[in-house]
Length: 543
Image 1 (cartoon, rainbow, N blue to C red):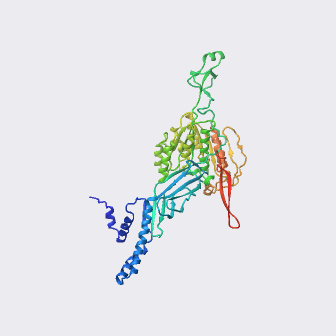
Image 2: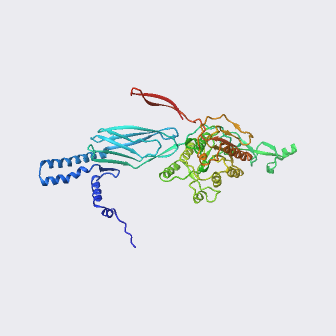
Image 3: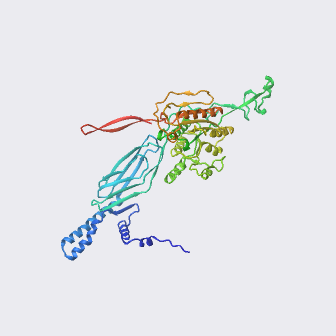
C-alpha cells in the first residue's frame, strides 16, 4: 500500500474559492518580503465599491465614476507603497540592563526604535510576550523620518525562577488605516532570578570537619607517625602502640597523626511538597531555599572557605522551561544524578511515577560556586520525593570526611526515617547536621526555637514580631495546631539528640538581614489638590 502525502498545492486546491483568493492576494502583498515581516489588508470593505463603480460606468458613462474609481485605487496603492517602503528600514533593538538579578532587584530593559526611511511612522505598537511577573513593556510610539525613539521598562523581581523574555511583535499601518505591517521576533531570552541571600545565624556543624584551608588540625590514629601520643583506648589498633613509651609509663600508649579532613559540605535541600506549608515568601519552601542559598554563600565566601555542593530533588520542568533549564544547567555545572546506592537511581524515580529528579552541584571552592548553587536553586519547585528516599538513592554521592547539612521542613512523623539515613552516612564517615524549617507562625506561635543536639535544654530566642499567616497545612488539616507542631519538634529533637546529630529550628517567614544591600534613589510622582503633579526623590536601602 502506497501512502501519498499531499503537498501544499494539493491542500490549497481543496480550499474554498474565497480562501484561495485570500491566500493568493496575501502572497502578492508579501512578495519578496522576509517571513518575519508581513503586510496584511486591514480594511478591504471599500474595495467592494470597485465592481459597483464599474457597473455604474457601463450603465451611464460619467467622469465622476472614473474619478471615484481611480481615487480608490490610488489611495490603496499609496497605502501599500507607504508600508512597502518602510518595511526594510524599521530597526528595533531591546537590551537588557544587568546580568545577575536576585529577588528584590529591579529588572530594566532599554528599547530602541530606529526609522531609516524617509516616511514617518505615525504609530507603532510593541506587544511583548514575556513571562516575568509584573512586567509589561507594551508601548505605542511614533517616530519621525530618519530618527530614533527610545524608552525603558522596569519591573521588580518579586520571585525567583526562570522566566522568558520575548518573543515580541511590532505592529504599524499606513496613514489611511488600510494595510497593517507585523514584524515578528520569534527569539526569546531566558532570565534567571536568583534567590535572596541573607545573613545566617550561627550554624552548629559537627566538630572535626575542618575546611581545606583551615590551619587547625584534628588528631586521630592514622598510618603516619607523629610526636603526639595518648593513652590506649579500647578499639585502638595495636599497630599504633608506641612500645618504648609504654614500657616507661607502664601502660599502653598509642601515637596519633595530624590530618586535615577535606571539609567538603553538602547542602541537602528537601523540597517534598507533602511537608511544605505557607504561601509565597513566608512558605517553608521559600524559607528553606533562602537558608540553603545563604548557607552556601556563608561557607564559600565567609571565613572558613569550604568546598560546598548542593543536592536536591525538584519537580521536572516541561516545555520551554525545560530547554531554558538545560542551558542554565550546562552553564552552571549542574548534574542530574543517577545516584548509586538506590535501586535504579534517577531512572527508578521516573519508573515510580514521580515527577522529581535528583540534581546536584558537586562541591567546589570559590565565590564562583555561589552563583552555580544559586542558579540551581532559582528554578526549584516542590517535588514528590521524600527526604529519606532522596538520601537513600544518593548514598554513593557522599564521601568519607564530608559533612551533610540537611535543610528540611519534615518535622513530622517521618523524621525517624531520614534520621536513619543520616546514621547510615555517619557509619561511612559522613557527619551531618539538620536545619529544620517549621511552618509559618500560627495563632499562639510567634517565636523561633533553636535546639542543639547534646545541649540538653532548648535555648529561647527573643520573640519575633511575626503576623499569623495561615498555612496550606493548616487549611488542609483541621487538627493541625501549634501544640502539635511543638510536639513534632520535641520528638524530632529527641531522636536527633539521641544520635548526637545537631539540629536547629527556624520558623518560615523569619525576617533575615539581607547579605547585600545598596542605596538607590527613585522618583515618586504625587498629585496635588489643585490637579498638579509634584516629583519627590526618595532614597532607600534595597537588599
